[in-house]
Image (cartoon, rainbow, N blue to C red; front, side):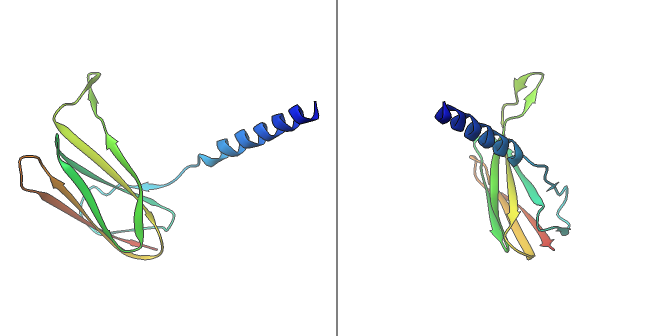
Length: 122
């Protein structure tokens, strides 16, 4: 009986802790290439988009790292939008300072496009 009560208490504590992990966060999404400033706790989301089969990469210089990479599947009229690849790079600060990011899109047909972003972590 004591053992089952301890297991129940442990499970309750674990579930309570798991629920408290999900927290609000501030996400900054630039809509142009003008340099900007963010706080150290902000997440910066940069988007790369190309035709289907494109290789989309991010090169980061400065005090930030990839926190999450999202491969986005768009829908229109309930159907998957065919012919496009979308990748979101969520960057997390590793300190204060200037960050430069280059998003490179290489389509399967050859060539490449690049978008450069710069921001300051305060």
